[in-house]
Length: 105
Image (tube, rainbow, N blue to C red; front, side):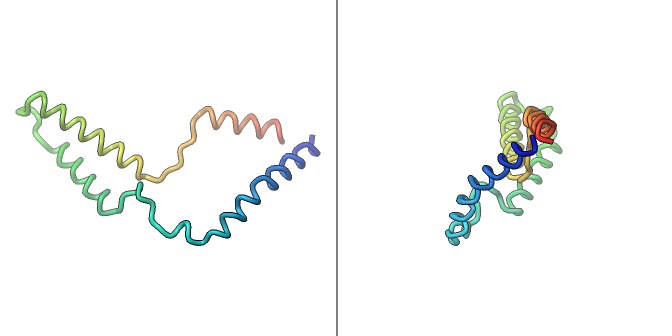
């Protein structure tokens, strides 16, 4: 079993090392900022807009205006989640990782 794990790790190292070497040869690929991430100024403006919407008195608004506000809030929340930069692992992935660790160790 230990021989299998050693061979598996050696094979993984052989597969990934050419990818890392080719990435090291291309120095200009990571010079531009990622356009998907918002700047801190944009995040602050989104947060202030959310606080303004939450502080509004919505009782005198019409149904269409409320719907428009709800859609704006969901858009802002989705944009902030996309720009959070966090790493999310699903429950299924965690279970598979634990099972692989149990099998390999």
